[in-house]
Image (cartoon, rainbow, N blue to C red; front, top):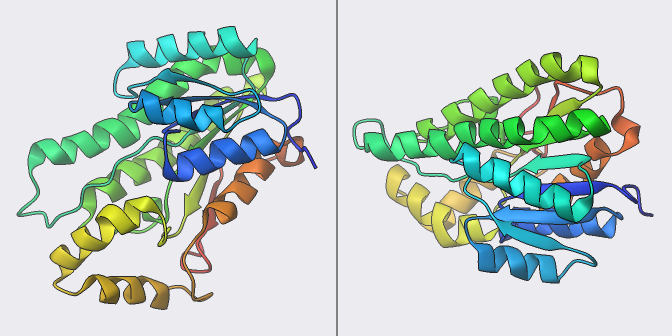
Length: 256
């Protein structure tokens, strides 16, 4: 079933991992998709897997780059109905050891980058009465141990989602967030986070994995499909009465 047939979508952070999976799901549901990423080659590889995809370079920390990206995407798509703000980074560490410049970098990408992307997209979304969706995190709802920069950026993201939802409601533009749990089998975890968290917490990588599974009532990690299922719903007309929400996809780990 193509629940998003004819919709025109962009997604940031589309080169790999969750961003790639979400781009592919939007495509499967009938949307035309343009991806953006610092890794242009990776974004083009994602676009090549889509029926009618395209990709452009995108640095979300630059408003001018976001503005140029949106113009290019609209030239390809003929308009814009769905914007998925997925680009993010994660650098963890204890407060006394956390380099201030690295802390600011997380905020710059995750929070300021979300603002830049939204600001550049809003004029087009007003025209289409479209929807803006941020990929947030359970860490946007609850503090994260030795992970203050990421949690702060995600808490701020939910504040921005709610504020934009109020501001854009008169234009029938909906703004929501998805808060996934731990994507334990994703490249981000396998290639980076297990190692970071094992070092920060003084345990093995295997113990890190088990620790995070044990915290989930449904006893498994989050998957790309879990996130994509909610994304498709929020992007569809079925969610036409939903705005300003931050939807948990955490297997019961986060319940408010």
